[in-house]
Image (cartoon, rainbow, N blue to C red; front, side, top):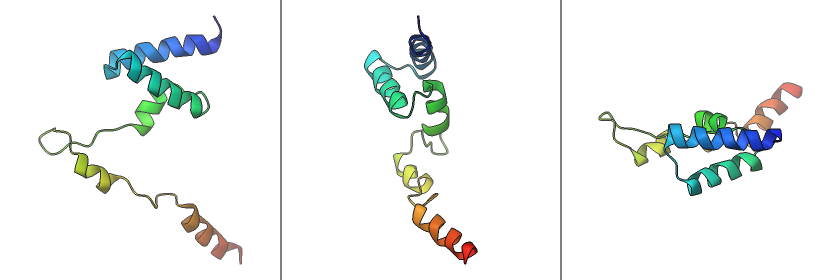
Length: 87
């Protein structure tokens, strides 16, 4: 087996064991990981996937707007700040 086949097998096992994903869900995550350059599913999930919870531990979808910031690492902001230091 080649390295990519071994990685996909590891990814599927990790997704099923740790995230309780179905085969279809595993396919979607692995496809996204391939689109991002072949990163591992574990890395993808640990770094970029999260669930917001309220104080009782229940999923809080409304909290996503408080956590997600469209301007985080905004290129417009970066270019404005960087441009000031060059001049």
